[in-house]
Image 1 (cartoon, rainbow, N blue to C red):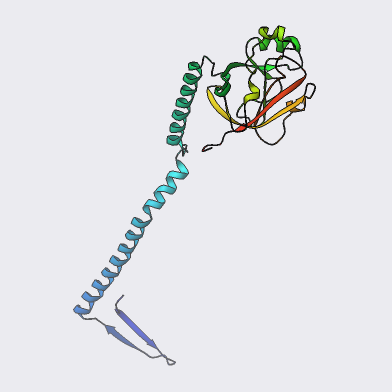
Image 2 (image 1 turned 135 degrees about the vertical axis):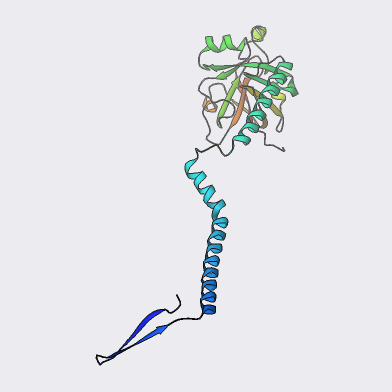
Length: 245
């Protein structure tokens, strides 16, 4: 504020002097203008800060007080649509081969196409004998496609050429498969493709292949060897086909 009023100059003595200060009109005008300009600059600075911080403050408030929404809702819809289209394609492709997309097998090289009966006890002749008249059997206790473990499918366990016609001979030409050949499995409306990696002849009593190796997903197809006998077991080992292979 500009000087005004009465000023007393106090000294050591009891006497004192008195002065009256009265600034000029022009001085008062400049002082008021200067003070008003100061308030204007401060107000402008505050408004500028508010405008700058408003978007940040707005988003912070929205984050704290708005109910969370899935960040991938739009992407989720795309994924759902893609999965639906994939399932529809698998159903149509399986149907074109007279197969069920619920669980079935396709090996074009040897023209082997069959539905798969799940959870068949490989140690019960009555149970697997009945299943093998209908298609390929999935060994109970082994995994299913997409679970990352061993999937064991077997077929045609007849011990005599005379009984050969009683059983489904889908795997009769299994020995023709070589490393690199493809095998397709339809499971729950999804198609899984595997590539043959090994062909093994094992003993008839060797059940170690039913156990998971712990080395990832693999598909094992088993049939008797030589065909029509129960002397040995022919095993085809296949692994998931990677995209681009």
